[in-house]
Length: 115
Image 1 (spheres, rainbow, N blue to C red):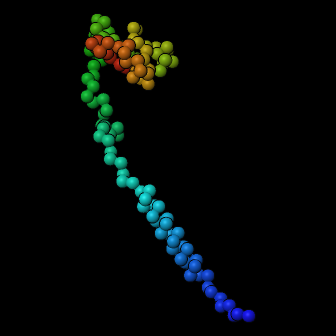
Image 2 (cartoon, rainbow, N blue to C red):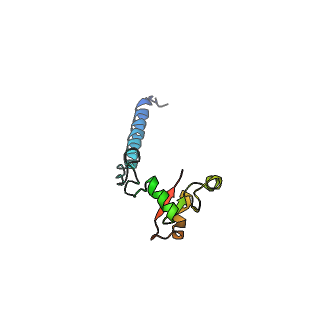
Image 3 (cartoon, one colour):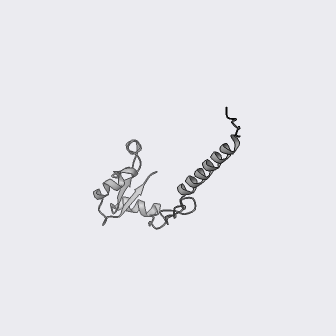
C-alpha cells in the first residue's frame, strides 16, 4: 500500500480566512459612500427659520382685530380652538396649512397664532 503523507490543514484554514477577510474589506469599501452634501437651510438649534417673516406686535394685532383689518388664523389643533380662540379667527391647524392655503387671500393681512 502506498504511504500517504499527512498534510496540515492550517495553511488551508489561513488561506480561507485571508480570502474571507479580503472579500469583507472589499464589500465594506464598496458600500461606503461619501457623506451627503448638507442642504443649505436654517440650523434649527441656532437660527430662527421664521426670521424673515414679519411679526406683528401685540398692540398692532389688537388694533387690527378691533378694526377688522387682518385675518386671524389659529394654527393649533381643533380641540384647542374649540376650548378658546380669538373671536372670528379661522381654525387651520398647522399641519393642514399647506393643503388649505387656498382658503386664504394673499392680499389680506394674515396673522397666525398658536397660543
